[in-house]
Length: 98
Image (cartoon, rainbow, N blue to C red; front, side, top):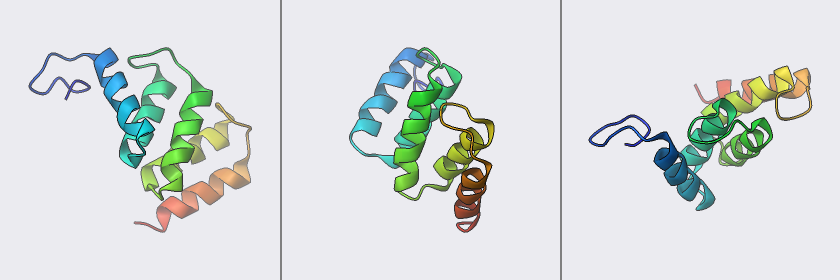
């Protein structure tokens, strides 16, 4: 709600904290969203390495959005080592779910 300002005043810092709490508890969609917040510096400073960590955690739960996120990071070498073959594999995994 804080991330979108739905029913509350938009507050990116509080949104980040709630996503972080849920991600730490193992909730895959929150892990993916936390990765996106860290990648884009929303509610916190930009941290591509931490973003890659959270995308990977969510991908371990077989979340297609996180697999796409990891593929993008691998393809560009953002936050993790550039590896186009691994990027392709992440995109392929995500595509198998659609």
